[in-house]
Amino acid sequence: MKKTLIIILACFSIFSCKENPSKEEKISFKDLKLETTNQTNQSKLEQSISEEKEKVTKIDCEKYFEMKFPNDSIKSSIIDEVLQNNKLSESNINFLQSLKNKRDYKKLEIKNSLSPIFRISKDEIGIFGRPYYGESSEEEILIKKFDTLKTQNGYNNEKIVTNYLPNALESIKNEIPELYYYTDKKSDKLDLKELGYFKGECLDFYEYTFDTSNITLEDKVLFSSKHKLDLVYENNSKIDSLIENKVKKECWDCPSSDYLMKTFAKIKGTDNLYFAYADTFPINNELDMPSRALIIVNKDESIYYLWHDGIDLFGCSCL
Image (cartoon, rainbow, N blue to C red; front, side):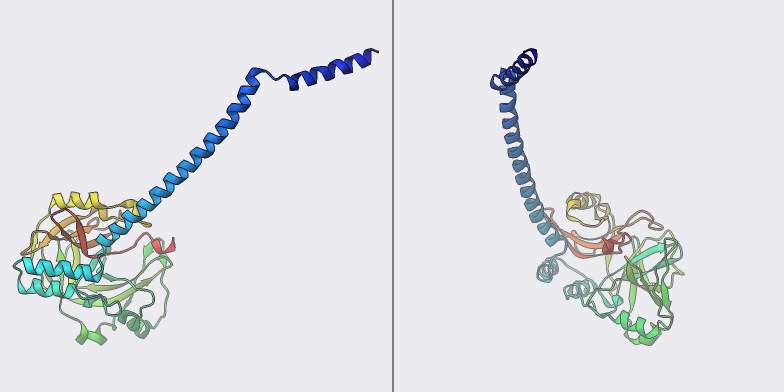
């Protein structure tokens, strides 16, 4: 009899708890359902906002790169306007006319209107070019012909080792144009010495060395050209700030040093066509992507890059 009573009381206790839940329990279940709904709605809202931001960013980045790297038609129109609205020397006119031509990546780097110069160590400075995949350049033909060792260079204790081909340039000496180098303060004739190349896992380039007997470590040697340019050497801090503010880091998949660019010379006869660089001197030991550029600044403070080149020391191609 005692056992039966205990079982009945236990069952009664259980059913009474389920059939008569407290107010607190009823409210907590309702709140829990509401909270779950709110979380779902919030999640959908956040996802929608994120997608909208991505669309806006994509549009902004497309516009940004359109201005940074204008197509040949836009670039040609910009240069034509410069030629029409400014009194320029004959050499500067010839230079700008040549800059309108579409770049031929099969040609030797030194045949371009402009080529970047970098010092990658105390003893190594040169004109740099880079292979473009799918294009068999004249440099590649020379390498295949004169690289008797057929070596594949790579990093050696984190140092870039360039393979030089002493006889390569001698074989094409009649094709090499007269060249000039430009620093942030002066220019002079440039005498080539050797063609070299580097092929690593994440970096490859062509390099033209030249006579540096008149160049010191203090000289900021920035680019070369087959044109003898008439320049006004000056820095424009206002334009430097403008360049920095215009750079959209969120649009770049790889490191960019363009926000550090400094102007150093303008095309004589213009007031808005400047050469600029991002680099550390005497040796670049800070920037992953030192670069050179020729920019034009419009009245509305928009900036177009008529030329832009650099060397990828980060190894972005491996990402």
